[in-house]
Length: 193
Ligand SMILES: CC(C)(COP(=O)(O)OP(=O)(O)OC[C@H]1O[C@@H](n2cnc3c(N)ncnc32)[C@H](O)[C@@H]1OP(=O)(O)O)[C@@H](O)C(=O)NCCC(=O)NCCS
Image 1 (cartoon, rainbow, N blue to C red):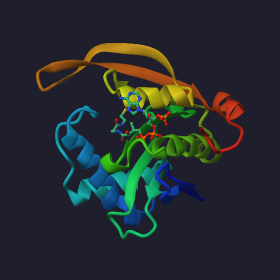
Image 2 (cartoon, rainbow, N blue to C red):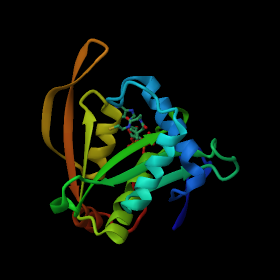
Image 3 (cartoon, rainbow, N blue to C red):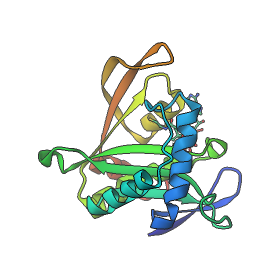
């Protein structure tokens, strides 16, 4: 699966499934967001090669899904400008549910990549992993992420008050979900707007 997509700034990028060569780029993006310190409930960047490789091995072993946004003219690790993962839940009885996480490199935000990566991740999760529902969670002050999730069709199903404590402040966690068949019914072609 490979999809070419034109950004709002005219640049062309590729959306595709992750490969082993992308590991470094993916963790570079993750660590950048950790260092921004406002979007993820994580304090420390991941530097260990073992941990990075273990994430990828786990993804393959559990048949989890990760789609990446790639700048075709750049070499690894600079070519990976965003990623969207749909992981399995820990419960056997929740195999039909996937948990979505997404990160776009800071300088490539607000160009439409997030919307297109989520669209692809939703469709591929149904096609490859028989997922029926996608869930996610988000800090309540992450207005950009929340507006994107609402635009896609995610509904808020709960708020965990003061779930996170970072830099001497408490943050609420917003819990959202989306039924894949509803999404596909509303967006029959894969060109979300
Ligand atoms: C959240 C994130 C994944 C979205 O990806 P993206 O590629 O920037 O998203 P898109 O460009 O597809 O869409 C962003 C939308 O939010 C809008 N937006 C930007 N800032 C906003 C704000 N402060 N409040 C509300 N909407 C905002 C944009 O205008 C755009 O909407 P539009 O396309 O209708 O104009 C990305 O910005 C990111 O990685 N952020 C940091 C990490 C993060 O928050 N991850 C999610 C954790 S739950």
